[in-house]
Each structure stands twice: as structure tokens, then as C-alpha cells.
Picture 1 (cartoon, rainbow, N blue to C red):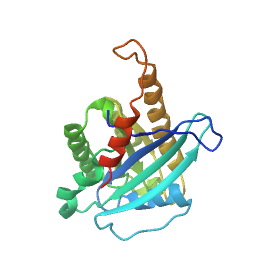
Picture 2 (spheres, rainbow, N blue to C red):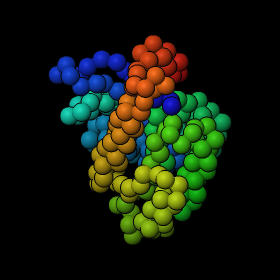
Picture 3 (cartoon, helix red, strand yellow):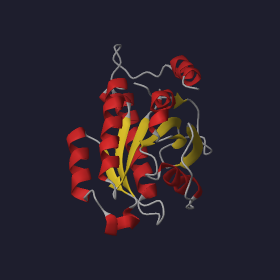
Length: 213
């Protein structure tokens, strides 16, 4: 799995620390940058179209672990599509963001999913479908049921959000955290060929080096 685990302990000295790369994918103006900014800064800003990629970090001190997010906000313009794969290489999670007031952006999110499915095995990445801009409910073109049904058929996490009104922004990132940690526990409990769980720290460090862009 493309899992990057950072050996060590948290501030309390007992919890493991994990570092995860999270990418935001979707069409231009669906609110990817605003979602990331709301989550990291708890504030709302309307951004100009991202050029290439923007980068955010967030650290969560949870009861069971310390989680460090590297959040990569990719450009939505078609002209940057050919280089976006460089930014989501070795990602551990992806948010496929669409605008609930634009059915076309959901179609684009589905294309991003097809691209991810070519690059990752199912257990290598956590993917969430995010219907953003619920504050534009009067202009809705994509129903909640439509987004939810597609997510279920593909085994994706799903939530609708609003970066502007701060609706369920923390919830979608927390859902990703919980799924990543669930997979960590599952991986740790799986028996090794020798009959017990092992952690290859040298492999983890090597992966950390190679995952840097």
C-alpha cells in the first residue's frame, strides 16, 4: 500500500504519528481551495483559480494517534490536467469535489475517479466524493441522492459541504482520518508471513523520501 507511516510518538509520548498526503481534485471553481482554507484556517476566502498546485498542512492530535495532513490543492483548468498526476502521486487520500449547482462538475469528478482507478489499487487510497456549495441550494442541479448513489456504487465516502457556511467541512476530513486509521489497524493486525505483525521502518523512511515532489 502507498501508506506513509512516520515512526515515533506524539506529544504525550504514547500515540503513533502518521503522515498522509491528501489531494483535492475537481473542476475549476468548485471550491477546492476554499474547502482546504476553511479546514486549515477555519475561515472562508474566495480564491482565484489555482495555478499548478497549492499546499496546506494540518495536524490533528487524536486520542489514538497524531495525524499530519499534507493537503495538495490541484488546479482545475483543463490545461493543467497533464501535470496534475504529478501532484497526486503517492497520495493516501483524495477528495473528488464537485459543485452541487453544476451537473457538469460531477461528470468531471467521475473522470478524475477513472484516472485514480488507473493509478491506484482499491486499498491504496481513500477516496471521498464531495458535493460542495450547499449554500447554493436554490441553484442545485445535482441531488444529494444522485451523489450518494454514485459514491455507494464506487465504494467512496460521501458528504455534501459548504466552505462558505462551514457545513460539514471538518466532517469530511474526519471521515477520511477515521478510514485511514481503520486501515492502519487492519494492516497492523494482519499476520506477517512469519505469523506476526511487523513494521518495516527502513521501508517507511524510504517511502517518505521518494514521496517528496
